[in-house]
Image 1 (cartoon, rainbow, N blue to C red):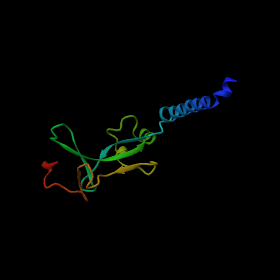
Image 2 (image 1 turned 30 degrees about the horizontal axis):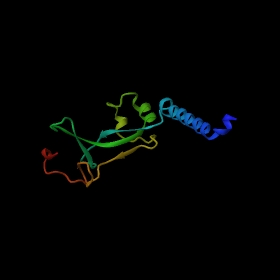
Image 3 (image 1 turned 90 degrees about the vertical axis):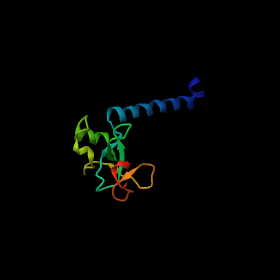
Image 4 (image 1 turned 30 degrees about the vertical axis):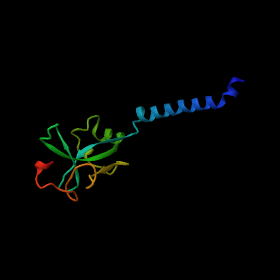
Length: 124
């Protein structure tokens, strides 16, 4: 009798537990999620974001935002992607891989073709 009176409550609790188990399996076991990171960008070819290595901004670097599935990155590079060339571009076998370049007029500072290039690199 108690179960019939609180059928909706028990149904919702069962659905929450099943959803949590499915999410755990998807993200922790199968590693089916998208990773976004900074990839190398050449300002001569693309409009790139600019970043600083330190607070004083004594040296700048140029990057694009890369999104890849974790399973593709792990297959191509292993656990460390810092020195992996395959992580710097979308390969033909990468499903859902995207590269985002800087858009002139946005909140970020851009450099390269189609962007407002400063007169000298000291302005970055």
